[in-house]
Image (cartoon, rainbow, N blue to C red; front, side, top):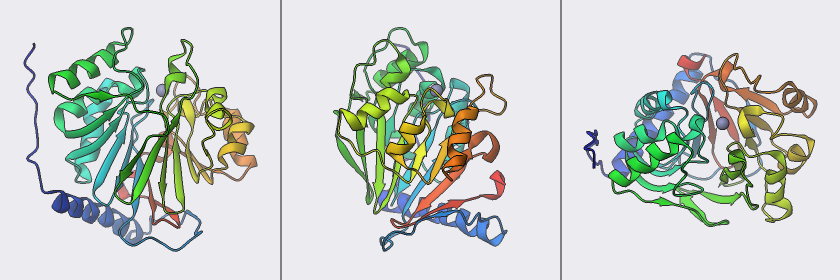
Length: 308
Ligand SMILES: [Zn+2]
């Protein structure tokens, strides 16, 4: 077995680490507001805020690809890490907000723009549980690197059962799809997660197409209604249509895509649908890293100086 050198940060006590992350994220909130950069984009409120510092969700700008970090009360979840070259960028972002360990890592599917940077993340961060839709995938070099790296580090890849729920601090995330066979289309093998914190909710869809996503509700019986929708497949019209927006009814939608990407993501049809329905469309190609904060009753966008 090839020897890989890896940098493992010293394990900090959970409570101290959580406090550090909260302090750094709170400083970003303060910096944004002090500099007049606070966007005042708020969704809600619908209920009484939960005690504690809340849930932070960042759609990390990895160009054409996906990578999302969720942090709640010191616990951390990373969904995808962009293409292989984006691995160090994701690592840099994690370090900038004080994250040295990841409680959960999710690979939504085997395409390079999602799994590509994950082997670098596994090598450089302490990782708890890894979820993916399969444990082997022969025809994707990037997934093989990910799979081999996990094995070398003695980490297991877990295929989550549908409906499985996990706590992330005071938040809960649940695997709600896919519920149907993906039938050769790797995009449709994407794990679909919903994340709930108090009355606020986020839906992460990988690159799943609109039909299989709708089936999570129609066949699986899962509630797809959310406040923030990570648009499937970087805002492609193959993932988002009127029916999906009827099922999800988001107040904000996020397209994770590269500037002037050759696919034309997000597609005009999706941009128009969002505009018609008054859905706030956020885009990593224009907005850079996008951080949203939930207090369990209201979601606020944090604009950091670097993303301004
Ligand atoms: Zn993709």
